Amino acid sequence: MTYQIHRYPAELIDVVALGGERVVIRPVLPQDADLTAAFFGNLSPRARHQRFLSPMRLLPPGLVERLTDIDYRQHLALVAEVFAGGRETVIAEARYARLPDGESAEFAISVAEAWRGQGLARLLLKKLSDRAAGAGIRRLVGETLASNAAMLQLARSAQFSLQRSTDVAGLIVMTKTLGQLAQAGAEPAAAA
Image 1 (cartoon, one colour):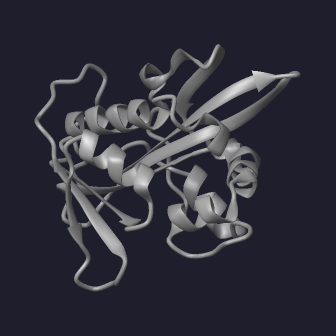
Image 2 (cartoon, helix red, strand yellow):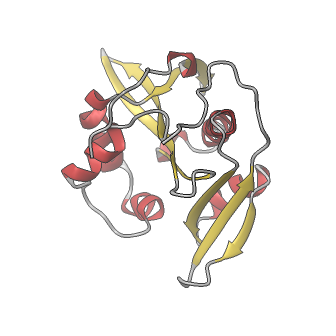
Image 3 (cartoon, helix red, strand yellow):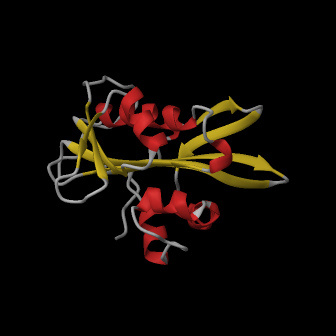
């Protein structure tokens, strides 16, 4: 699927200091395919399984394209990156994709193991939630494994409700109703 970029949301670019490093948070671009593939390829097998809910050694090219070729209206993805030795390295990614009901969006977050425990996932989830609310999304939903203690803790601290999946054993469904935000720069929900 190829999206047409309506407008790059430059207002979402942010620079934060974490662990003594300068971290740039920005919306993903189509040309980030190699960075995205490298990020997921460098995750541990367990972390990839937690993110995609299945064992995966490498991301298929079609999936890499779907993760980087987004429209910023129905699907928003943020990457966090550091720069060292003249190279940029993605250390986290977070995204939501609007569901067919138009009012809900599925979200996902992944953070490189070396960067966990520094508040990066919390920061990315807040940015996603704020942007989603500003875009007219009323509910964020996600799924995680019951064994993913870090994600469950993040969801609880962000006031998501947690329920065991009735369809898949060992899966937890996370849901949060979002308030309506009048966020500067947020585009209104797409009118089909």
